[in-house]
Amino acid sequence: MAIFGALKPKPMKKIAVFTSGGDSPGMNACIRAAVRTGIYKGLDVFGIYRGYEGMIEGDIKRLHSHSVSNIIQRGGTVLKSARSMEFKTPEGRKKAFENLSAHGIEGLVAIGGDGTFTGAKVFYEEFGIPTVGCPGTIDNDIYGTDYTIGFDTAVNTALEAIDKIRDTAAAHDRIFFIEVMGRDAGFIAVESGIGGGAEFVMVPETQTDLDAVVKSLKKLRKTKTSSIIVVAEGDDLGSADVIMKLVKEKIQDPSKEFKVTTLGHIQRGGNPTARDRVLGSRCGMAAVEGLLSGKTNCMAGIMNEQVVYTPFADCIGLPKPLNPDHLALIDILSI
Ligand code: F6P
Image (cartoon, rainbow, N blue to C red):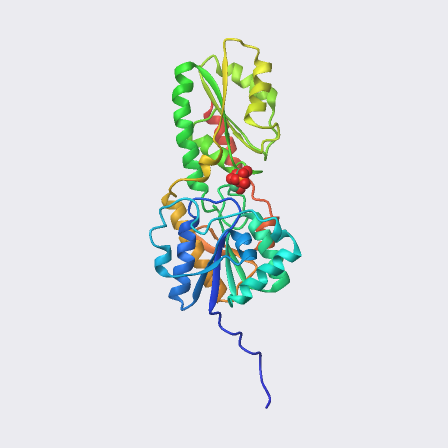
């Protein structure tokens, strides 16, 4: 018997969702959306616990609609997360593939940042299991989406802290250096700096000119008695502590007190903002719809309010620059 035309691909019946890398508020909303969209479309949905680690160890469980009840408002990730070294090895990825095959899993929703997508890309290229990602990281450093899930909450957490520090900075006429997260990107620093009325924001994307900072601080001292300087953890001059010491040395004013606060992991937790819940929900649904329409090796993001699918290679390979208008705004408003 002759067969004409291409064979129709077998419809997908089983998918799995996992979170990997640094957790971010809104990941739970994304998990919930992926699980419920999958069930709505008639799929069996599985959860893989602890990201790629759980995939290698076979920590995989069937999820139901009620499995994701009462999680949309919670920070962290109910599927837990990890940074897996073993998945970076061919042997680790082979074990992961065998575990997925044993469960009959035919598609994956990978929620995470650039490390997660780097792993997903290699895994897809080796084993061909269709995978669509969702941008889950507080850093907002992923190309192919205006914002990442968790960024808005992290910025608001940093802002709340900056507001509180400002009270005590003003009361004691002190200069505070506040270090925020973001790895190699300055998005959290810029947005929390603008919102918190910082005098300076130091980011990895621009070269920090120490002399200019010192000059401005000296000038500002005539009009302001306290200052807030937001430092992104990846700044080229170093940590907030290092920068504070450099500035203090150059200012040479024993009457001035300098303090450092590192916000750290507080920025990763907490109830997601409405924006992160909506973004997580939209990306989770778009990932499953993408899988069902044949998309793979790409991320579902939101750009200009529209769902956009961007190849993993671009998400991790293309730069996402800071908005130069935001940097100009800080300079102008800090006079
Ligand atoms: O990528 C998210 C992030 O919170 C970065 O901002 C930070 O540099 C890093 O993760 C911290 O990672 P860990 O929690 O593994 O120390």
